[in-house]
Image (cartoon, rainbow, N blue to C red; front, side):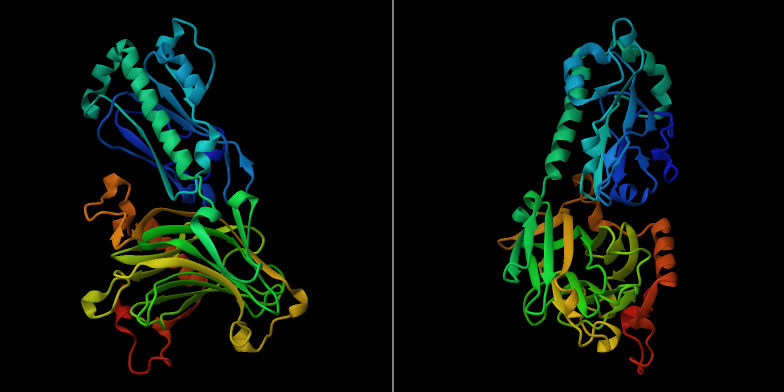
Length: 433
């Protein structure tokens, strides 16, 4: 089932259905853009629950502002059987004196659970029923379930919460090295923020400590404000060597009041020339926005705040190389390119506006395969059950419609429609839908 966009912020009950078997999957897009929240049925379990509503509080990773949001659940059974355990982890609606504890109880997860930087966070809630057909006839027996079973369910939830909280505790000190700039790049706020600066003498840059061979990678950027003409903020994946692979986001600065141009490109075995360019539907200098790369063996998807803007499919079947054999690092740099970046080089950098500064936060590569010592952290048998659904992820019908919307309204250049550039015919991958 799906919750209507934005409904979770209304403070009313938005879902009410007893689910014997289900999983709540929280997609980062929901936090960023208030997209639908999806509840999925999965197998297995120990406890019957009833999902009553979705509301409470979280800190938006995009705006850094506090919103009220909680996931509220209704347990069938005696949750007072291990009250200290629940009270230490969950915010109980009220103290529950006997015998009312034998009825349904509300409790909520703490808001910090919902401030994760990962693209998806899964909370598994379990049932001892194997199918919905026997749900009602078995439900009366739930009140007599043992203390051990209830506390086991609570411990399962605690383990999930603890794992999720630790998974989100990433910082730039741990994940990146500043590689150039003579002090113009800085890691601030105990590793939560990184800034790059550019002045007339030099720009600056950084790279990831890890290499990756496939991944779902997010970074939040706030671009150079004001008159940024001539500047380029690059954020990309790249391998080494003369036949390198590369996946590019480049943000081309402009005069005050004129929009940034988002330039994308894909290189495989040293060959690029696959440019697509876009305007953005917001001011990328006013706040942080999430720029994501999904790279799996079948496709590369570029996304902005969870909205796909470009898909580059594996076209090896028609002779087009695809980046799938060379591990890549994450790089970013802020540099002067006023010979070409703004209106083909006609507008030069105004150095009286220097230093120019771009900011980064909330890097996430939890869903990525780290390459180390010639092997990947993702095994050949990795599957969606291992939390690696992104390895086979593709655009669903809703995402395809959003992609079409962006390309219809905000794309300003596509190499696959540049007949002057390719008078002998477009590159073969352009024929793929």
